[in-house]
Image (cartoon, rainbow, N blue to C red):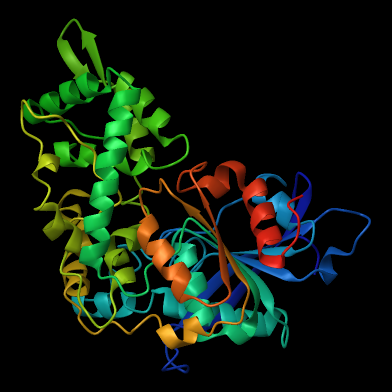
Length: 431
């Protein structure tokens, strides 16, 4: 097959696979799953003969990265692999989920349909793709954030398909409930708030002025929703990312402008605000985020319930303003335009109490596949203590504990991170 896309230093091929929505009903409804194969343009080697490295994107609910050039971790990977960027089911070009794609279902059927979009079926898709692209051969896998959850699920369900595994910023707990996860992450978010407002000395004044303005004026963001104080707090999902605090601070600097007609919210702020939040464009994140922690139990809107233990997040005049993190709240489905049609389905998913078990502790304890993981000690999204707990429960797992990176570190200095993990996994000297 001829490469269908040429980029700086690499070539790409598109693959689309027709796979079952429900693997328990293989003759039933089908979905399309898209993957992009990346190959080095190194003329001294035959890239087609290199083994695959499959990348599982963070999320849930986000398509794989769209590379512009041979750089970062991809540059390191292409020195010995073909890279397969998988759009997980429901994302990117893989039968994407949206309020439009679900409009022909009633709420019950929407919830049933969406229940097939967790890590278990993402891994079934990957195995079906492996049998088509490289039958009988094992491949290597790499997961970032939620992609790391997928990696452990792969080792749990189909280790026979994996040669070696890598995880960056995404070693999940195997047993902790959603409530336990959010109790830990709220503490992390508090710490990130302290860091942010200490680092940017006028940020508290800027954001408080904005919150007070929103309290007394109706303001619409570029996508049409009314901008509320609790929606403003959602910018906090960015302060746990590399270069995220800077993005939030610079946005706050532009928030309010003075005109001859009084104080107004800057149109630039209203446009850029939408770019920093993905809930309208990536609904799986809001619909299924809490379910990634559920095993034979319901989340029952865990983040909302646990938040009741942290009154400091409830903004009032005279109190410091605090950002929230990646928590999902039921009011999303009342305020975000593209989530409103999915409100009842979201409630059904939040109360679903028969989610399949994700991990078998005995299976993972006896894992034979070499695994190397980067655990970020300052991670706002994945609790370090729980990641270290899991590292003891998974056989053949080595980890690198570092404070050098935030949660999305693979995007910022991924070449170094992947190089270090490959060396760690194979017992080699770091290049």
